[in-house]
Length: 163
Image (cartoon, rainbow, N blue to C red; front, top):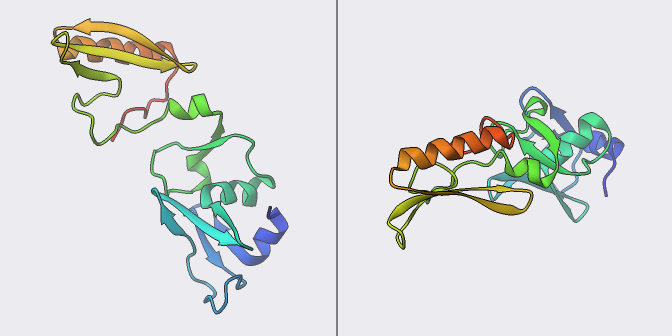
């Protein structure tokens, strides 16, 4: 595992832009001063000494001197926005409270979907590893209203469910 000192010797991190640039080559013939990191599942990452790291975790190490013990949440849900002001250390459950809406969502709201069995809209919310049913509703708007109220009740992040 890389240390803060080793990281700062080979990469420069700009906390205002969230970008890393090479200041020492750690890959054969890699040019210096070039932005580093490749994409995987929307996150930027880099391999150093045959070990892969996500850049948001390296940003945390660079600034705070240690790897985060938990997950790192991108507050604005943009996976490659590694500005330190956009990163926060949270546990897995809290990280799930700031999820973007899935592209295959048909209702426009996380946790609200059409139940063809009952021909009604169903609202659910996941809390503490359990799914809580918020009931079946004739109107999609009623299901969405209950889901939004539950998000407030269970302290979900204001960006949860945004595209």
